[in-house]
Image (cartoon, rainbow over all chains, first blue to last red; front, top):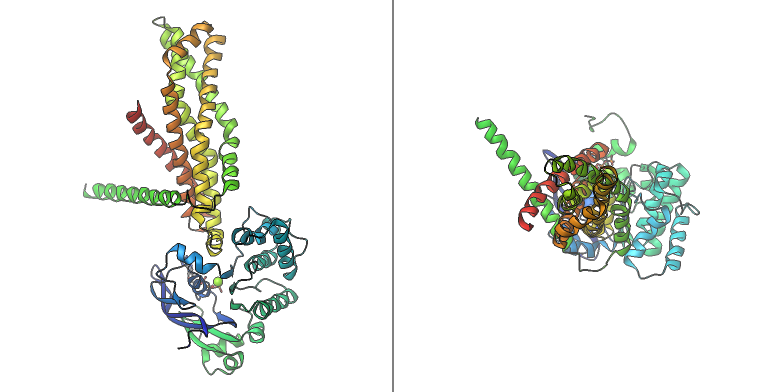
Length: 254
Length: 256
Ligand SMILES: Nc1ncnc2c1ncn2[C@@H]1O[C@H](COP(=O)(O)OP(=O)(O)OP(=O)(O)O)[C@@H](O)[C@H]1O
Ligand SMILES: [Mg+2]
């Protein structure tokens, strides 16, 4: 077991909401400095899974090792220490709606750095430009479209140049050009800051292009993993049906 | 019969459990009070929101309460020729009881509900989770400033309420019903002690903590989208009002 290679190791993760079991004995090892993409059906528990990685949800069973430390038994204060290395984009962006766009992006900088206002403003402008939102700093979240909100969320998640970034569907709801821009941004985040990216995506084409490792979540478990090539060659009928987007196959719509 | 007891027991347990959770949230918030970072900006904003913005409604309701008190006591006291005591009665009622209670109930309606709706919305739109993910404790960031603001601002509003109530009593008693103005004021000085005012302000602080804490608690544990926010806001207002009136009884029994 090479501790250094994996930044997140999940063993036997089980999580139920009431009678409804979402994750069941899930095993997942995420490699450091890679773009790890998790795919799976809508409602399959992908968001629940990444909320476990950052300690927002506690598992019913199992262990979650982040950089070799099990975060499951940690107190909120210990978790806060771990979370400083993380950035997270929520599926619905989760912008603070009492703050404008620039203040949203500046928020983690004011909280966790000793930078002055001018310096912070420069970072904010750069991050907003990277997601194609220069000059939008004064807008309130309620005035933005869904895709714009998502990009602000992305800029906020990257504000502190985190070591591990969780992206919950960064490109859903974006036009193709903007989606490609965001995918580039994810690749750049990995290359320039050496960050580990953990991405949830429904965009199979883009996934094949930017992923180093792909994980398929199905019925509470990771049923397949590997490089884009390996996943594309997979003989598993569920994986084949999913990545080809076919209506007929073993995946049941219920 | 058994069912009724079962139901009662169930309800009682539910209420006790909820009060316990509220106490836990309170202690959690208090545990942050001496620990940096101190969020003065947030505190001042909440003091403005809870205090300054409630001023008008407190002034209005207290003024009319004082006026109707004077009217009612005047008719009663006239029967045994004690009209000059109207002022003292109004002043005592206001400072000991009605000032803090009216302020508490009004601020609950205005600010307690808004606190719950705001934090509840932040909860269901994952903004609270976003704070957590940014390694910011949401209790320290959202709950503590509101509780401290309630603790500080309610006594200040209550002073305004007391003054307005007495002014209302003066307007009705002296201007309208022709009680001798000097006598009216003299009796107030004679009967109202500073302790009456202080104790009323202590009550107000307790009410301030109750209404902000309950608003935060109900908001913090909101589930179920916009509908859930509406539901917890209603619950927060009802629960705050009930707790204010119940604690008012016990505080009175303790202090006077
Ligand atoms: N807080 C919660 N309480 C109860 N059930 C929940 C909660 N969060 C998620 N679930 C349930 O867990 C399941 C998985 O949800 P999740 O949001 O992880 O899906 P997802 O894979 O992210 O789907 P999508 O691709 O549509 O975003 C769903 O059935 C959902 O109803
Ligand atoms: Mg999701």
